[in-house]
Image (cartoon, rainbow over all chains, first blue to last red; front, side, top):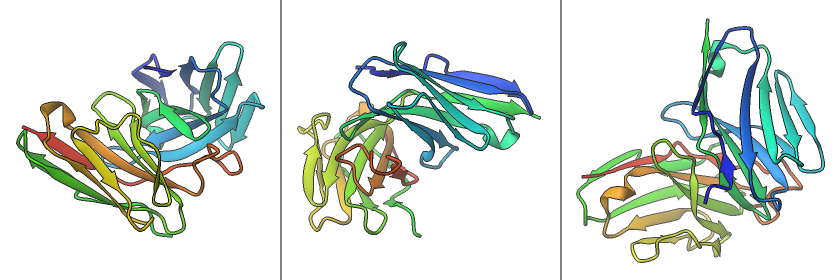
Length: 110
Length: 120
């Protein structure tokens, strides 16, 4: 069951521009949402999270937006840097049960 | 602070053989997870431990997969016998508290580098 979906397998942006990664979910019981970043041959690392009681959380160049009515969240990276090139996983949690999307591969071109 | 340790990093076996993966979580983390990540997919939870007790193993194929965390610290995941479709990266993760989804903290899981299994 794909309760968390990332419909874009890849995204390519120019250095300095905005990267927008999208994620949709189906389970209305999810109450916490996270983004993880993964480099090749490494495990995913936590990037940013948001509680379902909020609609925006910002941390430096990274901002996550949550639209509960649409069951949609997005990650904005501004400005994008070549070091941001990685696979980004969206994750959603309900009572400790965390589900991951399939990931979006971001490539930031110099 | 040392991260989550996993071994081996890579393993190649033939179908019907057995394999075991080891994980040592971050010190003090009560919750330990094993995830299976098949190429092109997101991590899928196999089993979650809280200390040495199983919280969720609903997606663990129990006819061939087993896991234990006897002393509530490190853990072993075993596959016996392996099938071709078991080829994946097996990720171990730990967190301070998984039962609430981490609502009292960031909800962050700390992942190891993974063990890549190839079944021929």
